[in-house]
Amino acid sequence: MFYNLAIYLYLLGVIILSLFNKKVRKMWQGEKRAFDVLREQVEPGARYLWFHAASLGEFEQGRPLMERIRERHPEYKILLTFFSPSGYEVRKNYPGADIICYLPLDTPLNAVRFLRLARPVMAFFIKYEFWYNYLHLLRQQGVPTYSVSSIFRPGQVFFKWYGMGYGNVLRCVTRFFVQNEESRQLLRSIHIDAVDVVGDTRFDRVLTIKQAAKRLPLVEAFVGDAPQVFVAGSSWPPDEDIFIRFFNSHPEWKLIIAPHVIAEEHLRQILSKLNRKTVRYTQATPETAAQADCLIIDCFGLLSSIYHYGNVAYVGGGFGVGIHNTLEAAVWDIPVIFGPNNRKFMEAQGLLASGGGFEIADYDDFQSLMRRFMSSPQFVKDVGKKAGAYVQSLSGASEKILSSIEL
Image (cartoon, rainbow, N blue to C red; front, side):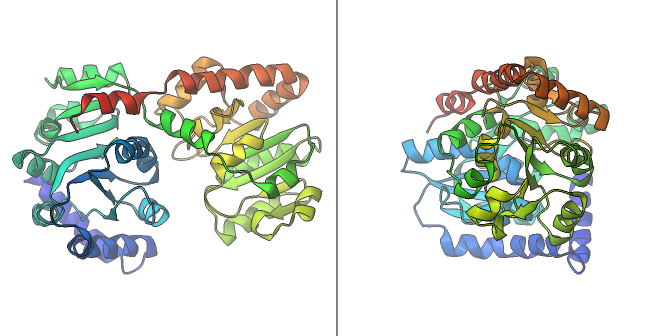
């Protein structure tokens, strides 16, 4: 079978790359260790619900459902697996799961070994995860399997004539909980009808984050009584080239930067572009923070709470592979700016349509928009309310899913 041949070729590539690439090596070692983790930690007689997330973003989509199940059905235990180190390394100590490990690559033997050890009574695959061997084996074993917050597009292989063989993997899913009506219609076009349109669980997640937001005394000292604070989250160099250029010539704004990559080389690049007084979060005191014009967040885990301190937010990635999480900013009732690579992101399109989000193509666009914000504080408040209302209007996906599954 072509799929299994491709998987074995991929495995060979992973083994070779692991000799040279630290991230790949972590993934490969984690996958090999997964079977030992299951042998050591799976409790005989316990009933496990298996959640699989490729990486950190998918984990955040699955998290609201996991936490509701854990609260209301303590009779179950949670097994959480990741494919990417960027998810596992950040959430390997997540207290909401009983067992956390990598998912071994989807070879027929790995699927048999994994399911024999884990013995899940139910499985949840988040968004894009459709592993052929795992899913077929789950169906053979009669394990109810759900696709959560999935989204489909006409260009995907499932809907092409040459993808019909692999597309059969979708028939292994007991029920799909999709984000939009287009996804339901695409699945119907290949005669899959066990589909509910529930929306995206990330809307529930950001509302929960907002309710549990941390107070950050250092950030509060930095903001002080500044009338205008700009928060740039998950930024990359092309984003930074735009907003730092503006910030350098507009002393009326204070700037908080939480870059996507927190590495010394990237932090040095950012510092080299700034010509105003700047301090790094991990090196700041309340006194130095209060005197600075720019605060660089050089650690993880704070961004979702930091947006609360801004008047305007910028979410990076739109000049590269795609924008990051715009909902974390929008939930705080502030305007959200992002770059042009946002077409595949439903939440960005929704923000644009609601009037709470703004796309820029270059520095001139950004400058024009910022001048409009500066000329009308009421406009900033109005569009910020639209952003927050958009998030609120699409919450509730997790409850819809819970009401449809039998626990």
